[in-house]
Image 1: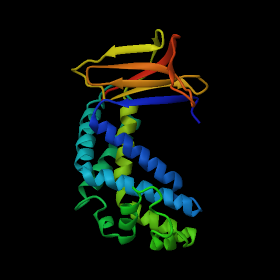
Image 2: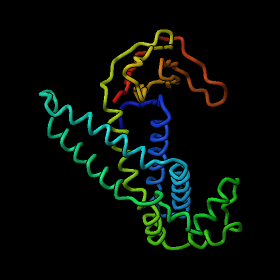
Image 3: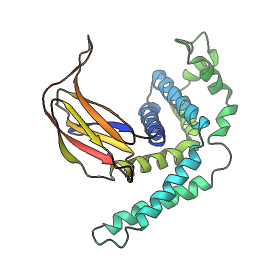
Length: 255
């Protein structure tokens, strides 16, 4: 486990969607190989959430644009003597592989899931509290009673069309996060604000704090500026902003 906790704020809709999908994939895969029907339920909900976002946006085109843009930017660094060329070549090779695989996809992403009657029945019920219980969806109850190996195999088959999407998102988000080294800043009285350079658009703000630190970071911002307020968590009442100075790591990720 990392010694620090990182708080993030995307500054455009593209990165916001990619971070949401990254979160959903992480949540889904954390439950995927679980042995209980509750693990499988969580994985199915995660799968349907991923499908819901991807079916509403042309995610394949967005990923291709980003990967091709990153490829052009990174290729320009090959002659820089301060760059680790072996690491750079590895990343460029990964980008090329994902671009080829995305170009090789035909039709809507995971379009076959639209014809899956079991998943369709679950999707229609999960927005209702308790709507996916046994008496509402006997077919789903039957599937959940199958052996673990069968449920996991089905889930992996349903997930297979998303794998190149997941891998591409993981690479893009990693490149964004690693695009800028951290600087150490001080929030005077628990508040920090910074103006952004409009000629070099920042995509993501990250704040790093020690895991044992008694405060969390609340970030807000847009393309022109951002602000950070450090808060004390109160699980029984409204959270309170600290008035103490706070030293933190700041990443203004731009690529």
